[in-house]
Length: 327
Length: 82
Ligand SMILES: Cc1ncc(C[n+]2csc(CCOP(=O)(O)OP(=O)(O)O)c2C)c(N)n1
Ligand SMILES: [Mg+2]
Figure 1 (cartoon, rainbow over the protein chains, first blue to last red):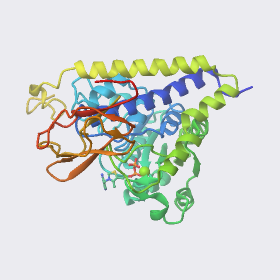
Figure 2: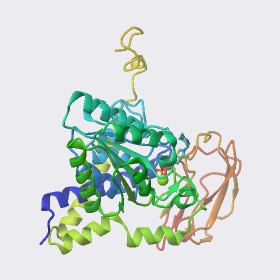
Figure 3: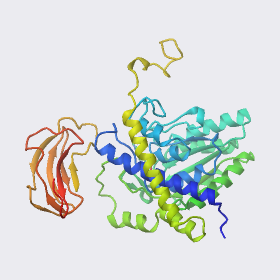
């Protein structure tokens, strides 16, 4: 018997598979020069994104980082609109103005990716303050990397969230590296979660390759936030399979290390094994899901390629309030 | 069949020039072998094969300009032809 529902298992597995297929495809397209400006591939980190977002309400707010395709897809944005944004086409989530690093839509509770390492938690904290002021029954989630979590502004924001009991959840998408820097080399005190004690909030280090564990901790943090008890930090240990950015030829980690994570701790494989042994999914259903996400990503690429570039005359749209001709 | 191409990495990928071929058509290629060297505005770069096989035709000659993303050769698997 499983305490997971079949529906949750299927949608979570599909969500992780979609991210993997999307990222592997986008990586190739980027190397071929079809996606301008490069991408930050999140392959390997699927369980963090899907575990967190599956514990949230669609109206909850997220603010993310430069590596945000997985969060965005897990929030329910379509592969079509995300791929089109990577191609900087007018049909993209940000109407082709943002590209890979600036996916977002305020109306759907996505306060964006951004290029400033460590900015996501501050943005999410502001959103949490807005939620509290309005009395909305929502929470705000700020993603940050293991590199970004060593920025001062991140802890400034956490401190304010603690004293004001803001409905904030901080997710450390801890993929072990900040570009070429291994997390342990630059993290004072070892376990980042221990810092939570000094700031006066619950803080957990968890297995970020286990989508169920991520979901459970996020759900608990959400309950606490909704009850007015304040923020929580979740340090989810994960791993990125590709380089920091597309095409990187890294010499800073061994092939053995990468292979170990891929073969022994892959979030998709681990969840398939669990869901299968608990009778939640069959081999043929797994194969059907793989087929399904492959088709969805192929369709997304086709859609992105055929979509038009933004019209030059629309350059001021979303830039000003109408004074200069935008709106 | 593996397509060997000039990857579009970084901003300065205009004016990529093929500097040198290290494999000729018909040569045996091992995974990881450097096939060609290219030069960008900023640096030179090795282009390696990911799979083993037999080297196909040179689609560009030394000193040719190659648009980023373009295929410069293929590595043929057993029984494959161009
Ligand atoms: C304020 C700031 N400093 C430095 C950079 C350059 N930079 C971009 S990504 C990155 C590493 C971030 O590592 P991490 O937070 O672990 O996120 P990951 O890339 O692993 O997802 C750095 C240093 C930046 N964009 N912004
Ligand atoms: Mg990192």
